[in-house]
Length: 64
Image (tube, rainbow, N blue to C red; front, side, top):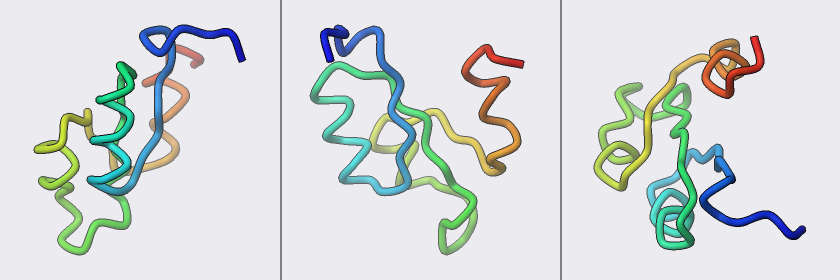
C-alpha cells in the first residue's frame, strides 16, 4: 500500500492482534465493546488505546 506503519492506525479486538500491530510499528485502538468483562484490560496491557463504542471511532481518528 506504500504507507509507513507509523502513519497507520489498527483497530483491533484481540490482544494478539494488538501485539502484532505494535510490533509492526502501528498505533492501535483496542475495541473493548465485546470484551468479556467489558474493560479491555488485556488490550491495554498489549499496548492499545481503548474505546468501547464504535460511535467514538470517527472522533478518535480525527474525522468528526
